Image 1 (spheres, rainbow, N blue to C red):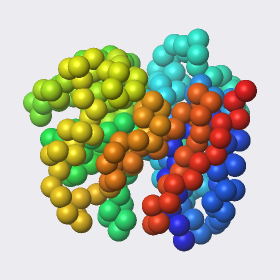
Image 2: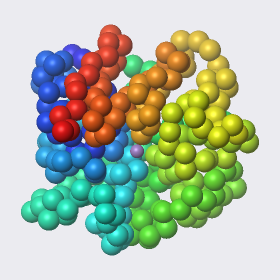
Image 3: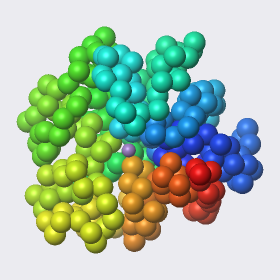
Image 4: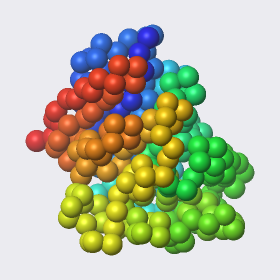
Length: 274
Ligand SMILES: [Mn+2]
């Protein structure tokens, strides 16, 4: 049995199939997905159906594009010009797919493997248990009776600095933005949420979240490995062996990447985008 974690698919279903073939993915294996299963790419509907049908063999965390799709479906959020979500919204099984997607977590932690998966990243001040608890606050809102209100309040870049005293939708928005949209932070840990580019080209006041995180975590075997996506411009490079970036820009014409968690072997298949 092997566990493969795959970077942002964003509807690149053919590349996902090619990658699974490359690793000889079989019925004893588990598939982890770092989120952004859908949007911008050509076949988000087939991607969602395939992963849902894996049942308990798939572990998914939600990304910002997945949450956007849910907000469009549940609260009538507007589609953007570049969204490629129409086929899902028109599908006969749309409701079942959305219900399944809405039930997925923002963070997945496997204590046996000692691996934590999140779409964007973890702030340096959040312990593992705090991270799981804060993710659960958002998950409870998504899965509860008031998910429409959650989606109506989800969009926005503020508050950009986490504090425990935050309440209500400001608190849920800050947790959601941190776990699903963070890339660069200011020195005081404020989220930037605007600059998406390569490291080295950012404004001087910005630092990647994982540099702060790496400086703050205790060293040793108990520290979980972090798997994340969301940041195609990194092309898999963080320079930290326990912080693994899996988004390698398949939807932008680059490649789709997976890591076998047990062996730490990386695999990738080229984008089919013309
Ligand atoms: Mn993303």
